Image (tube, rainbow, N blue to C red):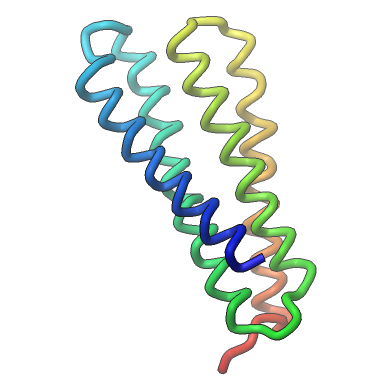
Length: 129
């Protein structure tokens, strides 16, 4: 699982940089300022959660048997990022308003990931040494 979450975090992080560059260099002036702001939100949250996936991977590497809550955090961060950010990218590029209704599903998954990570930490499921 270490390699899966590490690779996922690295890929999402790199794609977040690419999305930000695309927004800055190709979208500015092509879409409204509000749409650009929505796109930027997707890229920012993608980067935040790419980093969170890297943390999950590193914590998994420190344990012999990763706790289920730690694995759940990783899966929730991955699914939430894909749903949240891609729905915001699609909304900003297409203008289809219903896509904005999908983002909260991804947001809920991201929140669930943070809760799972907190439970893993509080439950001392993550090795300290």
